[in-house]
Image (tube, rainbow, N blue to C red; front, side):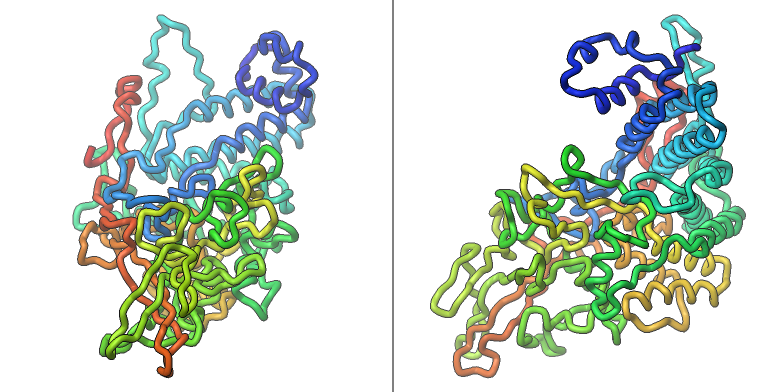
Length: 609
């Protein structure tokens, strides 16, 4: 049998299987250890190779990289001194991995040629590998547009060979999304129908979620790019989808999303209707009996854990030296509406600029969308059974006005606590919050999760049922089916305890996705596909959307005054991020690396390069 499969991948799989006592085997040349026929006659080996592929497809904003949350308008970096980021890199979250595509194609070639498996199993493993390949293409496409589609080819090269046959031109942007959708159409029926353990492996419904997401991305690109004064495109369509294709893609998105919705395997989790904040936290973060998460990057101790909890835990709850690396910002907090008021701006001062006094630090957030406290630890919130105190200082009444007193974190005076150990502060001290909030979503409540020795098993959902509902709403809206669009949108709002809407616009979709999917790697890509990123993050110091803001709570010291012991709040620019975010037109597509062009002159550059 011709050796098509990568020795490197076989070797990685073997390392995961062989015991530490087999040093004599590990010292051997992997070429001499195992043949393709042995790999594909052993399902343990097949699954090990697939596990290797799963481990190589984790991109974008995610909990393995806390800094990734601080560069948009969801969170800010509290670690040390200011982060002077303003512009976005030409390669931000860029994915270019034809090495992985080649490895998957080698796997497929070996799988198809073996006689050791029955057809049902072969088709199932093939579907899984082809899904992962489609996921690679999707992640490349959302960053760069059309890219070379190599199909099932496994390229071999010997020095001196003519390489022109190996050089593929970029596809059009429409073609790459069409390819992803076609792949899912061909394979999803061969994937399992039931939820997988910890959502770690893809099933039929996860594959359909990729189809729905790819289609709604393509539809919105066709729609909104062509509504720009100067649409972003290349001559041959590597970037830019014709507006006439929008309807087709929206129809595909709606159809795939509704297959998931009507499949009966997942639902919007509502296990705690009397505590909607806790319900939202558990719907996303708890693995046991989860009915909402469809596909996730799972973690399991030992060996596969994530440091997000350790890095971002409040100092008062920390189990190790690490803590408070980043914190959500006021911009996001105020985008969560009130139950009875869609304007989510916090009421810290009255119309005359005077403080509004609150009996406790949580009172300013009363009647907010419950998803807020399910996603973010607010001043005075309880986490792991303990109150998380966030206090920037004291506001002392002197001569009819209030004077601010601050101290080192954890200090007190005769009037009580001055500045909490958790912060917030504006100095460059490490390990102290500077935004006024902590993460709750993806923060692990289990003992030991914030220690260096153990870390966390918290998964990172890539697809969940709520996204199917939101895609269906968006696609129906764009297809002018307002009844269906509102019906789906109001399902999301109802789960959150919010009033149903009678009318809707794109702004409602933007708002709902913003708060429902905070920290889940949607915000950046959503604003890009709607062509809103350059407007929201326009680099202007006069634009409150481009500036990051913090909320500083203060305890009032005014003995004999009715407001003594109450709380007031200052909204202020987030000192650790002094520059407005500036998303330029060139940032809608990653740049094509010059080395890629040197190796393949058919790779044309993207606009604005």
